[in-house]
Image 1: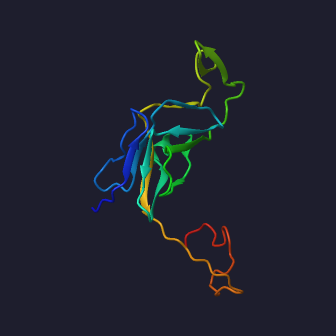
Image 2: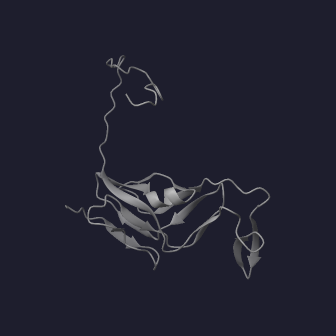
Image 3: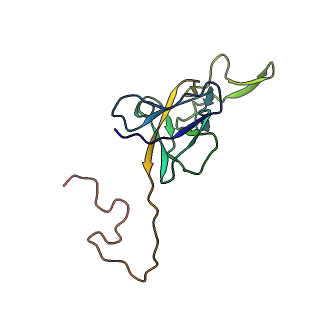
Length: 172
């Protein structure tokens, strides 16, 4: 396979250089650099501890890992890292679980460190993304820019302006 050079800058000592899990994998693993608690209904940014320099004409797409999506209520939001962005890369994750009735997470301060707790345990369906977890994947992809032309009419097609669900759900 042909490789395209993407420069990597470590911003945290524990940041992992992205790697492909298999020789023919389309996506490379993105690894959390710190623990992040995501309670039901919350959205959090999980830092990866690095920045990149993507060649012009390319982007990195942030995508979910199928195992995380299948086995948890965590949903990685799709994202784009543009070639001109030089800041720390992070992954936005939603916890779509519903909060357990009567189980509200509370904060307490322990020796200057804030942590979530409910009695002795976290609220049901709270997830802790651990430092070192492979939480998402990135895909390097070419970017094409469109040149928009304003016109009075568009060409006709068989579909026309049929929108969401216009073709039904049953296989033909």
